[in-house]
Length: 103
Image (cartoon, rainbow, N blue to C red; front, side, top):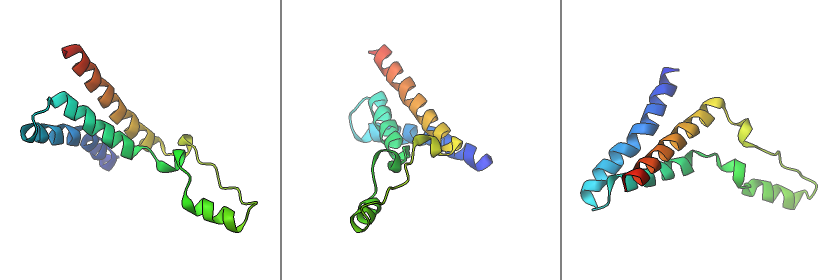
């Protein structure tokens, strides 16, 4: 549980720290950089087998045309993984709202 909590704290703080450092190097507003980093993190947190088929399934289907790959859904992911995705999504939405309301 402690390891999971630390991981979620990193999911929230690392984009903030990276965007703060990047804002010194590049002359871009801080909220825009935070939105970009949270978006990239969210993209990599979503499991790839939900939306994309694997090439292994394609190769198996070439060899055996009656092969039906197991359907994987987002619900098959662990609750902790889904909670991590929701935390990052919530941070992204809050940052977008703060940026929108400040302009």
